[in-house]
Image (cartoon, rainbow, N blue to C red; front, side, top):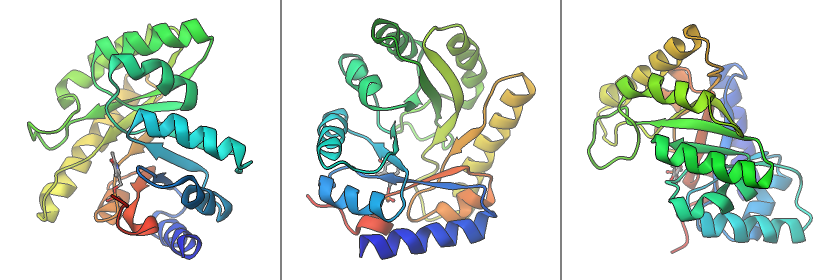
Length: 223
Ligand SMILES: *Cc1c(COP(=O)(O)O)cnc(C)c1O
């Protein structure tokens, strides 16, 4: 079931994007066996919101001799979780402050690691969402460039949380425009992580290089 849904999704995304967009599986609350099934079906990108689950899931997958994969953090990182985040994930998609970037840089240096960093953009203006105001993103990208152990690779956004398709599209378009601006300023901003189960087609239309999907592959989440 997971296998069939993953393969069908991957095919739809390939058709819709002309091969430009990859699928990252959002695996929060999924047991290792379910994640293993997705990896056996060809998944190569995983995303965790919860750092405790990131470490236990990756340890379990290693014991199950799971196929190689690249794991990203897609949830907010508290300072005291920075070490576990960079130990188990190759990219942190959710950096939205210099404080967090500095903390990640420090633990990367301690552990002799190089990690990918994406800036989370609040593209909808909703007060309830994490992420940096688009106007403040270029300055943070410059600051990250100066921090050892970190490589800035792109932007991540949740987008407007509404049934209003025009508003969703506008929030993705804002993020895309920002990534064009950063590239013009010389940043290696090649990834645009946007789109989830219910809005990934809009995100692909608006230039997403990576959609983050959970429910469409795993079904409704276990409690
Ligand atoms: C859970 C989650 C997703 C996936 O959402 P679905 O609706 O399950 O596809 C994507 N991005 C983030 C940050 C998430 O927390």
